[in-house]
Length: 351
Image 1 (cartoon, helix red, strand yellow):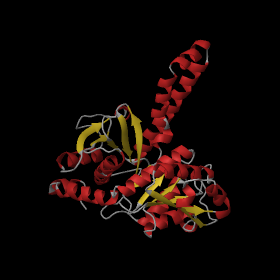
Image 2 (cartoon, one colour):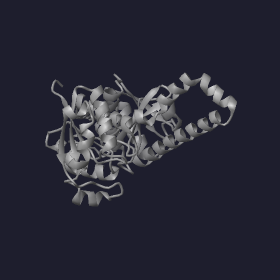
Image 3 (cartoon, one colour):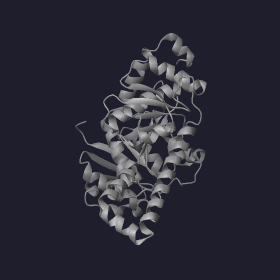
Image 4 (spheres, helix red, strand yellow):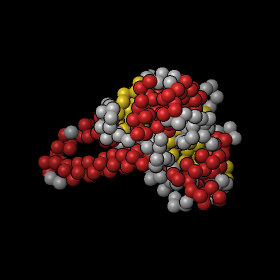
């Protein structure tokens, strides 16, 4: 894309908004001179922060609204009253073509509900999925769905595989990503009908990714595949488990290193190694969950993140917009489904 990439930003979403949002966007603006921003939020609250943002203020347009979707607001209520909110207007900017992507650290359920209502899904995709990048022993892995769809059929899982592969190509620079389906074992006969049917389709499909087969829970941290596909219930549990174990490990490490003189001395000696470890597992460097399958790009930042984490989410949005992701998803899905035998299409309900 030769023109600047425009990102619509919900300036009021997040625990420490708008200060955190502005600082994060200023950091992203320094890193990405190819981007400009449209902020939506309360002018009196946001403008003083923008005035202090040295890089951002020259590349930002601020649109005023006093309506904010609260963190505990029900999605149904947000749909009724929130379309003129900072979140709703950011999404509408994508629908209107004024922005290439929208980013919010606000209420996840409300964001998904409004994004799906405003943008609709891509042709042929019945359910969008939430995808995020997790650190692994081999680098990084894309995990989806993370909670948008509690139950999924085989057709949905096949769609998620194609969408996740394009995400990995765009954000992780994987030329030919490997894709696995999360299961209770890696044998072909394991799991319920939906995962086995999806695997049968993907084994026969012609695609720009490599279907690895089934993977198990410990394969997430191993980085066995570039993409791991599952239903939203399982994916959300897996994500929260990974986050919890990471915090537990960090807490144990702090206690061990700070509990004695020898521990503090050991930390001083190994400080460079611990700095490298901290950077690898820092959740702020992996922030930014993408709503895949919508007719527009929407990225959800963690509500409790800081400026560095929000900047990461903005850069995910910039990369996805620059990579023409939706066009590539449609092309990938067309190729996958065109290559599947009629009996396989019937097995997953076809389209």
